Image (cartoon, rainbow, N blue to C red; front, side, top):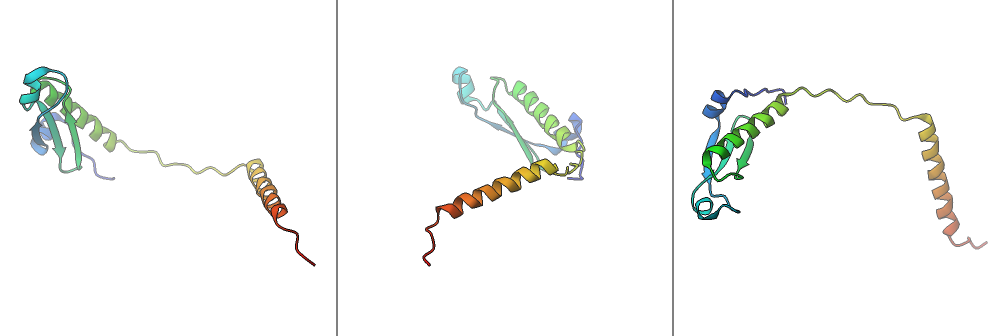
Length: 115
């Protein structure tokens, strides 16, 4: 991912698609009837976040935006390239020795060949 995404709140509010959903769980009739849950979709990045923990739609909306910002910042962060390391010679010797032993064990299980 070479593309970077804006993480300021105003830009995200314009770019994100906000949907209000019913949330479940404790909180009584208000929480079960009202659409207090929030689902945010950010089309440029394809990220979707949801918040249904609070009984208040406003609080869930704030939580969803915080999560979206955190995910976008994580995606914007440059990753260090992995530096491949060579397998130690001792480890390679051990691995080959174990393979030899295993092969010998399997050969010894065979029926003796008739002459």
